[in-house]
Amino acid sequence: MLNKEFTMQDSNQGILWEVFIQASPGIPHKHAGSLHAQDAEMALLSARDVYTRRSEGMNIWVVPANSITASLPEDSGSFFEPSNDKPYRHPTFYKVPEGVKYL
Amino acid sequence: MASNKDLFEYLLRLGDNTLIIGHRLSEWCGHGPQLEEDIALINVSLDLIGRSRSWLTYAGEVEGAGRTEDDLAFKRDDVFFRNNLLCEQPNGDFASTILRQLFFDVYTYYQYTELVKSKDTTISAIAVKSLKEIEYHVRHSRDWTLRLGDGTEESNKRMQSAINNLWRFVGDLFDMDAVDENLMAEGIACDNNKIKTLWEKTIFEILAEANLKTPEKAFFAKGSRVGMHTEHLGFLLAEMQYLPRAYPTASWS
Image 1 (tube, rainbow over the protein chains, first blue to last red):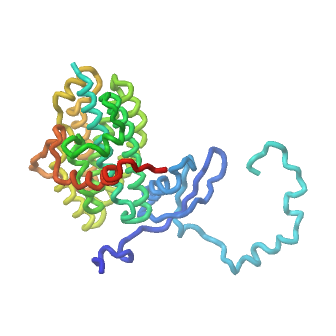
Image 2 (cartoon, each protein chain N blue to C red):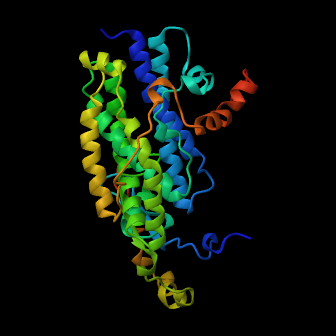
């Protein structure tokens, strides 16, 4: 039996942070994953160690996971289905110019 | 007049420091206090061991006896190692590891900043290449020191006892002998007295901010310059060197 102060339940792993990485200038930050940290500065350091050791990025955002408001699965009907039968909302009638990478 | 022997000795000091403290940090693999920190410690460890490869390869070339980085790392006994006593001290708890790392990272930061100016172009090049990762290491150990020292009663107590335990190995970091003086005269080595002044200023500032104190009275252990180590190095080497000594022809492929 481990000493009580060392059990996982008792050790404070910090709050959950979501990590966003920008791979190169001008393109959007992309969700890379999440991690635990005590505060924003440590979250940034951990994000660097966990997600960018192999030149994956040049800028990092960390956001407390509880600051993100997400839509609920039960809302998906009212949120997303009405657009399914409105093809005119999709930009499928345009030709993409050559050389445009990130459209 | 500095000889090749002086330069070889000096390179062993640099290479053994990063090898031994790097190996110590590698012992945390799979044991970190949280997953993120486990990865962070091992990243630092890999940086340090990688740097040892540069130093020991160059040391082997300077010696001219055909020894490779592996020969120097795995086929020397403890009395031939020249790492500072601080580097070989056991990990202890997380506070103890962070404190040891803070002392070492700030030391290497100022040491390598000076070595960038070395007239030996290989030393200078390795120093330049390492400084960016050292800046990151300092940030990592400083941030943890502030959080643990100024954290809970328990974390402050553990950091303070780490300082009380490791402070006696600080003097050894700045010890100098004829090797340093001969190489300094030729603009190759750096002046440890200068590094000591800078190190103390930074460390005292960080510790004060972290609500931590240095011991008022201290006895400083010495001996790394002549291979007189604490009892811990032998055990570390026994583990680190076991495989290549038991299976000399083993290879990755």
